[in-house]
Image 1 (cartoon, one colour):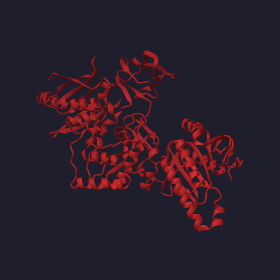
Image 2 (cartoon, helix red, strand yellow):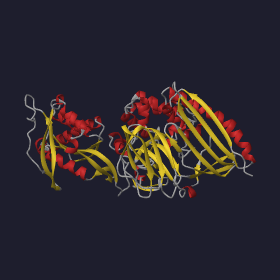
Image 3 (cartoon, helix red, strand yellow):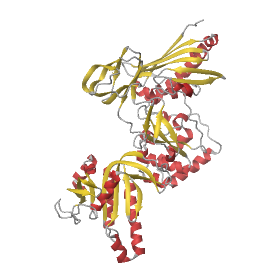
Image 4 (spheres, one colour):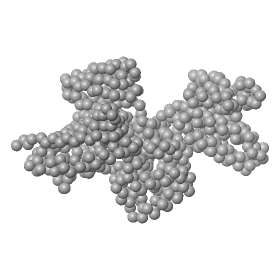
Length: 628
């Protein structure tokens, strides 16, 4: 006997706007956790073969196994989301959930939450009204009102205390760790916030602490918070984890506690693609409390809600031969419309004056090559002209800047100091994207040893390393290695490298009496690099590194040879154009050893001599065009 479907509808009038509520209300993983839905587990044997991101999931309620096939979530940010579940085991046959957020004329949001549930048996006919109609309804209301209070007050879940179960002795251990972090140089207010978060924070938040998100919520410097998390890991307050992200859905496909566990090739079951890992986007560093202080379980309560892929602004399943219209409110920028089953996608540019209506068709012939311009308020008609159902996905192309990527982290001196043994597996090579490489060397070091003897000269070289290190760390870079009296360093930004080496050159050229002046040669270049393990430490190689090393050989000492990639960087252009920094950049061309078929446009950056015109340099230009 087929039992009738039961329908429940709840409505709330909330203070916050749909845009403010969306990150909380559409976080279905948190919502299920907060409304005490059991943790779910994927049925792996079947989930991988289901089309269009369907999943087979299960949990247990009072010892009763419940299993279902879940349709892909559908949503339009920030106004609605929903999902359909078809149950294979348990007292329910089918359930549909739909949430709608509508802006009210005088501000705030009308939130309507609906559930349709069809029982499979008499047990379901009894259980659904009791569980959904009464018990869950109270929890739904409590969760939504809590989210509204946070959103209306400008807060996030970082500000919300959780149910805390610290391990025995954890309070005393936290107090000791706080003093340890302060002794290691941690900023007192940030140390206090981090220790308080670990001691009182919400469990779901603590399973994946993102340092840049913490910094933004605390109105703090991102690098300072990242460095504090690294210090806290070494002290024993936190554990780190490297998350490997799919380039399409951007979900974490694997997590590892060491760089040495990362494999360059990874598979995403959801997107059904294999991808090559790179450090500049696809490896993110996150943290969680150390188990000696607080145990947190990385459980999942919903696997595929809208906040799992926050860069996706709309997702809709369209059957073959059918079409649907999505009314969208989009931020300016570039987007891509694709389907999960078809390659490539349609590029879109949201700008003022773009089309207010557009029809986009998915077909076996592929997507149009031209980029379409859409208005921020647009009606997008999606048409499925294929022989199969298609899951349409509209996603922002801009990558989040709240991820602490491996490329940024491994370029920090604090990371190299604290985790000197963190390296890739021998033989592995992983792209780190674009980095700025600096090479330096002391002019006349051989003559220096001959003139003053080995011990004094060695002392000067060590002092020069200290000066360089301080200048590099001040600008957010790190020393990769030293060879003799030469230094290789990396920076995330060109202007940081230039400021660091110019500052070090000034200090070395004018040391406090009775110190001996030193002239420092330097070369800076930016480009893509490959990370490898050499001598059991993380190192970099590739054409970018080779060119930077060759540029140092063109330096006369007291100057910096920079490439076009450095000179044309907007921040470097601004630095050079600012008259009060006292430097001049003079262009020249040169061939470089190993790149003889190419002439490089280069610039010699040096201090302006006092009382001289801008073209007269303090240093004597060597006139060399190839390194010795």
